[in-house]
Amino acid sequence: MSAANVMTGTGRGRFITFEGGEGAGKSTQIKLLADRLAAANVRAVVTREPGGSPGAEIMRHLVLSGIGKVLGPEAETLLFAAARDDHVHLVIEPSLARGVWVLCDRFSDSTRAYQGSLGKVDPALIEALERVTIGGLHPDLTLVLDLPVEIGLQRAAARRGDATPDRFEGESVAFHHKLRDAYRQIAGDDPRRCVLIDANADADTVAARIGEVVEQRFPELKPLVRTVASA
Ligand code: T5A
Image (cartoon, rainbow, N blue to C red; front, side, top):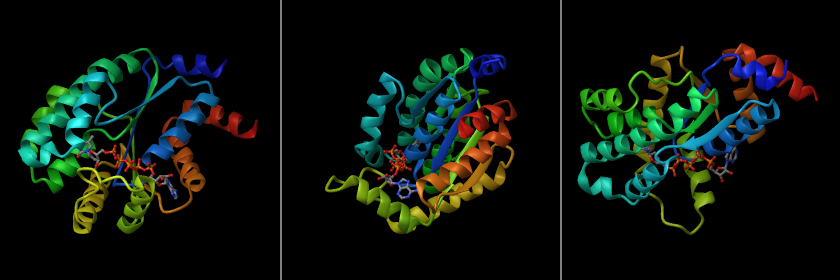
């Protein structure tokens, strides 16, 4: 049986989210996992939040410009929710329904961490918005990339060059320490869904750690990944 046949045999695609602080390496790792899945003949889309659909990309531009900071944490939460609603309904759900795996750079845990833990937005509001935007949709696996704040910020600054820090990159170091704690808490509270990944290593080492977790969580993939690795 080909890899594609094995994958479509499960019906619905798998939903994997990548979370973590600034510069944790999410974008880098999501591409590496996508390459690995593609080599194993697994159909997958790579997407991101905020953004991922035309309407949500407009919202992305708005929130990263800092307008949400001016409007306040509740209004900013609404902007992220509006973007997520569009993205879920136009991209994520249709892809999963077609049997396509979805690899998403940030998802609802980002709202819980940034707007909830850091912005002090009432959890009841966040939960109500989740019911509207994602309903019963939950990631099959969430990889929380964890590394010391200073290293993440250095990586983000090096990549940015002379450009101005965006809305959240420009927050204080204390903010980013609390953010790291918030993500560690999220991972600890939901170990069935979340795995904390030590991201303080070179990209290939982190990718190998992620590959092991993905193989363990999705046994149907294991022989496929091994086949690719030994090819
Ligand atoms: N947000 C988002 C909310 O507040 N609420 C929400 O609900 C949502 C969805 C999005 C912002 O919006 C906020 C959170 C964010 O602040 P973004 O531009 O998408 O902004 O930013 P981030 O998601 O934070 O992504 P970054 O691009 O900053 O970081 P990544 O993706 O974690 O890191 P990556 O892979 O781009 O790597 C950064 C640099 O480090 C290098 C890379 O080459 C790159 O130069 N690198 C490594 N260097 C050494 N060793 C490694 N292992 C490396 N891995 C990568």
